[in-house]
Length: 252
Image 1: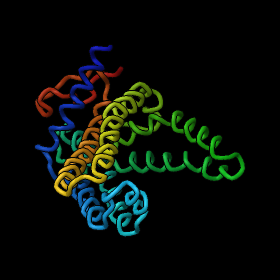
Image 2: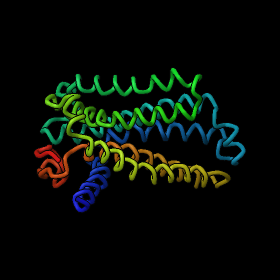
Image 3: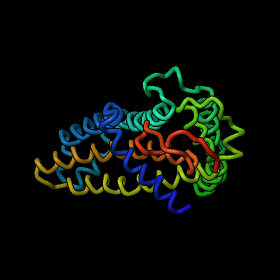
């Protein structure tokens, strides 16, 4: 089991980088708005000092680009999941006709509903209890992530019932694999900003270019982790992935 997990995570790392060559438009969805925000940050003097950074963190122009960046991050992650799912099924990721929209709508709808109890009860029970409620509901509905992957991959045979019956281990893998790639890159993302404060202009620009790439890797590695983690461990590699996991030919 440990060997299978290590092998699968190795595919996550490899394919999370490989997608930059196979479909460069996908990381561009986040890299370009991320860099555009950095340009604004440099122009308003955010990196002139740590104090300036704190004072300008909520600058409205910066946040206008920030919202675009957040949208780009979400799109890049979903597009990465879609890319590997479509590739494993012999399709094209940009062909939206093959998406199982029903499964996507069910997954997104139920994920949104899980946030309502905490939102409605926060004033009554407090922030700490609300956090516990949201965590409990999130854990109880983890297989919805797998249903979302099936939807993006075009798997219409999957259902809400099937993922809750068979895909708990897959859902846990998704969370673990995603955390393993997200946390260190997010830490590096934060350090890039720290290193940029009071730095020479040339170094600031270099760090922000590097940081844009790091955020792009967060998206492609996380999306790859979500897709590859959702598949049963004992899947047979196909030439479509050149050795990475593809179709779910067996169950756990």
